[in-house]
Length: 291
Image (cartoon, rainbow, N blue to C red; front, side, top):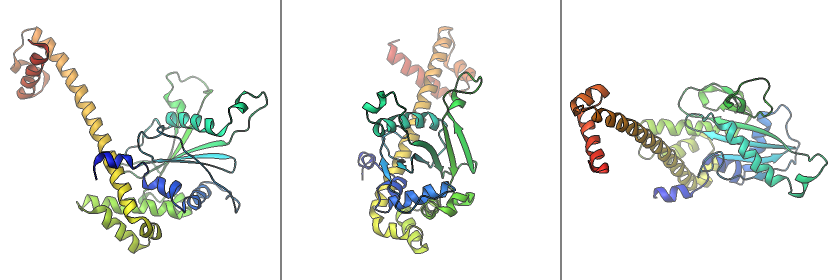
């Protein structure tokens, strides 16, 4: 499977469990009940909401649905938590309200009833993170004076099994999903070349998401390949952007020192770079500027 084909598979396993799968509505209700003191009454209906390319670009790792007069927005992070989630969530809920509120109703004089939004991010990455933390939109404001007129909070919950957050005991599917990721990570750490397949086999044997994995084993592998390839693409892009920015800065310093008649050896010493790197940059500079 090529990288392009992978990225065209839009949904992550998290989204499939809580949005697409035949059991998704049951899983959504279980997750809602785990996060609230009062459970939803039997027969509660879920209204699925899809907003594209706001929380995550080109890859679906978010779930939103309407239930009980609320809009629930969930995201998942398997890497470092993005501290701009409140900003993204603000843009997300705006797009969601565009779908929910009819155009004519927006111009009525009478107050329009809106479902109350709640925002959650589930973290299961390898780096240390608090058991639970609230990210606030107002923390990003350049001016920090008084009570902000616009606020949005995102609750980040660490669902790594070792963290033992209380929500995991209340929502079986979320707990088992966290265990699945943990087992997959262990196989990858050992250098298992067939980590996805072996993780599925181990989880079925241990009764972790067993029915789901028996039913959708090959689809799950496709989702995992796509997701991990996407994460790798993002990491590579970040590294390339960093190196590009670093080289731009080096070239500017290089130009200044060349204009002062400095030798490559002197420049390498002053910039604490290898002579080879400096010589390569000088050659590239001469070629691009015909000097």
